[in-house]
Length: 167
Image 1 (spheres, rainbow, N blue to C red):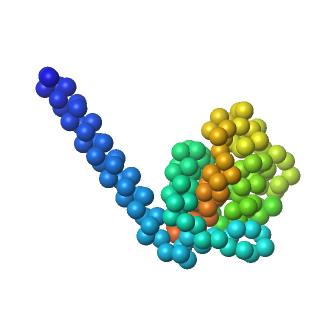
Image 2 (cartoon, rainbow, N blue to C red):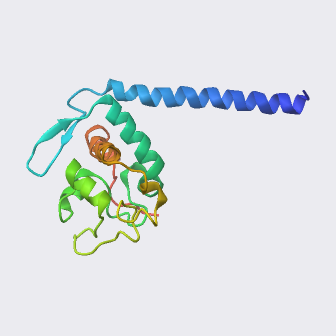
Image 3 (cartoon, helix red, strand yellow):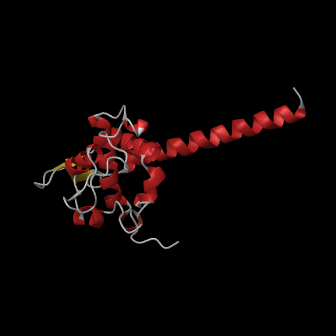
């Protein structure tokens, strides 16, 4: 093996180890959340649910791989004035501040005022033919993603959604 190949393989090995450490640190953090932090609103009637650590991990993974491209940090890339923070979700029509409402949105997205479908421009189950990432999403996957969105308001508060963004 040449020196050049050795150093390349060495760098790949080091980066792999760093990735594994970071990944495991992020997964371990779900176990550190107490029950209160993992409790989110289930429906518009005020019923709550405590997410399991597995749901927390799954929601984070699915959100990061499917949603974070446009909603990094809970913001909205296409409209920085509308985020995924709890205040924005509560102000939407209909309200999107609970798991059932967010699942409904991920199946059939509408404008912020609820008057028009935006399924052709926003990934959803309804538009899975246009947005391939949505094709294999199950209701459990949508539940985990919705839980992640609401959980972030509990644990990251003002950092999640962050309000207006000026570029």
